Length: 599
Image (cartoon, rainbow, N blue to C red; front, side, top):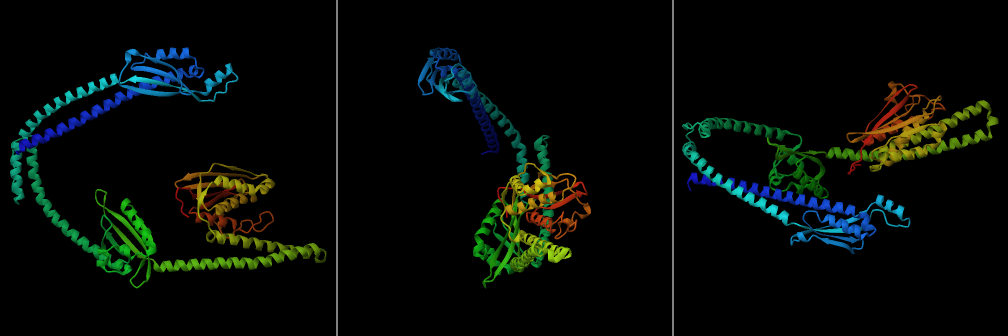
């Protein structure tokens, strides 16, 4: 088939298809528009009629119903309208004989009496027991759709005629353009053959000053650039070979296993350190699935994570075990990232495997050590509590039964002994709480911080009443945390504000919260004695006290250090601000609750 005929056929086909698609879209749009306007018009008419018929149907006033029906029959395209009561019994039906049609659409709408109309009706009949917003009946209307279909047929007929005209014009234009293009294109075809044969010095001459002429000139420029590109490509290929050699040299000397994967996740490269960690040969890794080397208990979870990584092309990170051929188990951390090309699409993946077996052994040893320390703390606290209890018990007996024999000086010494025992008991309890922040931690759950703070205030009710203090709490978003530890955190901070209040005014404590990124920022402020900002870091240390030992400001100096450890365990931070005699505020952050919580 000649080029002219093919070009004419192609251009005409494109135009015909485009015009046909546009015509179909135009017809579809107008059809939907006409149908939508028709539906809206009849629906509005029925809803308005139902609204006007509410009271008449409820009290079954047939005359009013028929009068409204007759007025409704003036609605365009309406064939008949029927009114039913709440039991679907026909009350009245009116037909428009001049609008009878075989093509109809039925619309039905409930008649509902609202609260205001029922209240008005009850003024007339006090014994009326009609429910509010009750369906008292329904209206059914039959509309003719012949006029709508006639409008649609006219639109289709007009579109068809216009389409034929456009197609005829397109055929004529296609013939003219095809004839104008074929002559200069023949020269370009000849030139292309010469270039394909390897003659890159051949140039095209064309007298046309239009796009074909510019195309001929561009073809000559293209041939010149092609020759230059071939030379540049040879240089780039040489550079790529050098780069590949450097990469392989670095990968072979890397202290971690390096892998390259294809777009489907198949392994295409592994360095010597990776083979050493896997205890495998290069052929075994490249030809077989490397998942077979994963410990059977970890294989399923790692495969799921890897498939999700390939599907989403985001990031892969997992800690799992490999089993060597000799049965030795190696703990590794595997990471992988997509390699992006210039278009931003992933062309493959590169990953690393790090042997963390020594670190894993140290971690297990630390866990065992922490467990032993926790056991030691429990035993030591039990062994210390018993002597302290006996000292306090016998001291109280001496104070009650032998105070006269001891005299004033002896009683004073005895009081010091009892107070020292009580402080020792408080220190032991505080140290146990501090040590158990991590060892006795509970999984994170969803917490309502306002409810939890209210419960803490209930526990501190007596201390608040004695101090005459007040606590103001704002609304809090839900947080993710350990319920017992967060409760301990709030109790320590509020109790601190009550304890360090001024003598000349009752304590006022304000607790506010706000959301910053994925954290909830909580501020606990008071109007107490405050502190110098030089001690802002010191007050969170274990056994740190700014006021020494006194009856007024008793304590062990562990409360704020427990608060800091709890907040840090939740991944937050805590700091304090204050001024002497002007009050203090403690600011800390806790994780905002999300759908998926991590302990």
